[in-house]
Image 1 (cartoon, one colour):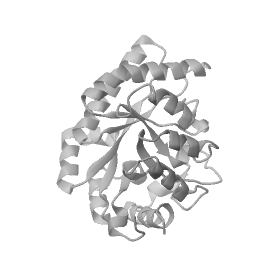
Image 2: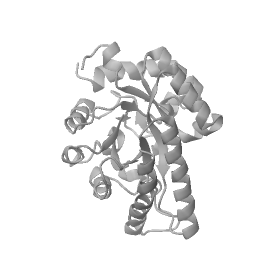
Image 3: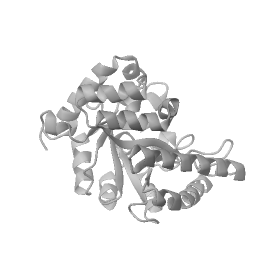
Length: 281
């Protein structure tokens, strides 16, 4: 792998959230202008134009879809809520299959409103994944469990470590349930390197952005451009490659200032930072 453009960008994917105000069509054309080969799509903007239209845009541009965000939110304790979540996840699986990606990112959900039963919420995730696997298997879509930083445990993701995600994933075949290694969420974990090695053959997505300080008031929008914070991207990238992950490296940034900036300039910056900070020089 080189440090220059061209072949150095062969695995770089722009997650659509990084340029949040771009439509699917605008994000696709932005990737084309920047010479990026892949894009990570989100369901909501895909729904705005329709799945078939999104498929056509990506196909015409010659891009691959590195992942679809997102499925999950499986912690509702009521029968009605569980069924609604499973139905929505099955639609997400169909959308991923139509878009040609085998990676559906699963943000599993936080505590139900008013609940303090964290073990119960995690058990609901296990049950939900088990219910979805046969449907996903038939469509050749892998459910990619994304552990999230503990600050999001209450409201967004009750899986906080790769170890917890792998405990669930390993109940299923590796091509059925995998894990997402998102640098923002896992960099702090003292066991991260051990757990990445444990995840050999199960890493479905590798996402990069930085941990910046001080955190903004809205922690959800606290992701920085690689190189602006504290994360050792090269070390984590080498670890996932040693675990046999040679797929796309997806830049996913939630940050109000980044979203307010000119999207083409953002793409240019993250592309250069990928070359300078993520790849070996």
